[in-house]
Length: 122
Image 1 (cartoon, rainbow, N blue to C red):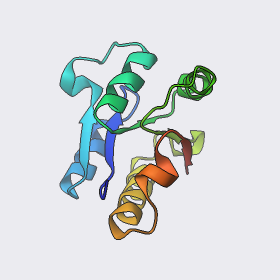
Image 2: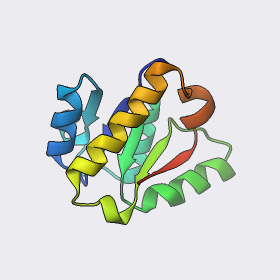
Image 3: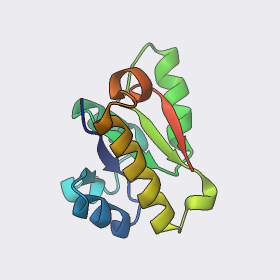
Image 4: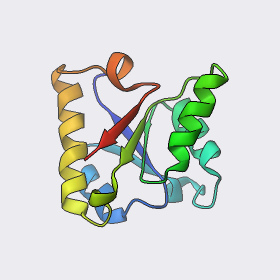
């Protein structure tokens, strides 16, 4: 995959997703598809099925990563937003755009560097 695609849970502001979309990044919000109140595992399962990286600051995704690996299950990747970026939309937008640009430029690979891993953003 030459371009990252993001899936955000209900904890990520629409300001972030709107700005990413403005810059040409494919972003799907859980609210867009009626999954706003879904369990975290359902978010991870859905994002994986469409090859999107989950973006969240919900620590349950860290637990799910460990659980899925113990069960031999793979996922599409998790970008865990660290605490100090919560509420700092401009810094989060910048960080997500940088990751998107790195993959687009070939500086890193979705499959080798991001898929089935937790990446701490911030």
